[in-house]
Image (cartoon, rainbow, N blue to C red; front, side, top):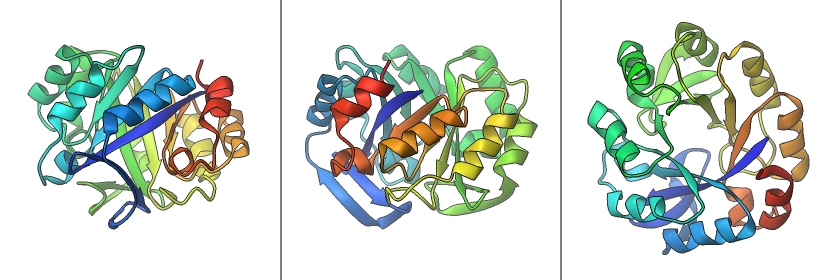
Length: 237
């Protein structure tokens, strides 16, 4: 299993939110590129970059994302506010290995299928989940669909992976929703990337045991509850 540090951008800063709540910002660092360099120096090989401002329609951090895409030795997946075909292919052209599509992909599966056909293996579907229900628009809107429904509906679409964030666990570093991920790895035709709640090496091993392909790490790395070099040594290959 691969561990991927998160670089969440807000107001030109690198931040971490608790429970998907934009009013509960626990970490704010003023040099996102420096943070990325720190994770790469620790031994990580892939970064998860999300423009939270673009995701919520409150501005954007494109210049910083571009700087992060120029970071040496990093394979970068970029997301946040990707709702048009132009957004996808702009980031691919600028060096992103994968583009993460959330709200538009969930709300318009036909559009997602069309884009995936144009860029097979390059799109990651972000299914943000609160108690099994899919949430969109920066976690502000709850849909009537479960994540199982979504995965079943999109079977056959040539995605790179599905990124499932347990929003109810996000930013708390108190353990993951193992039952959720065990359920999804059994049915998903694509690799499952987990996010939300990882707080220990045992959490990582538990996810690996359940067939999770990769895990996005945030709060536990930023608070040093997890030793970045130790994590990278076991989970960055």
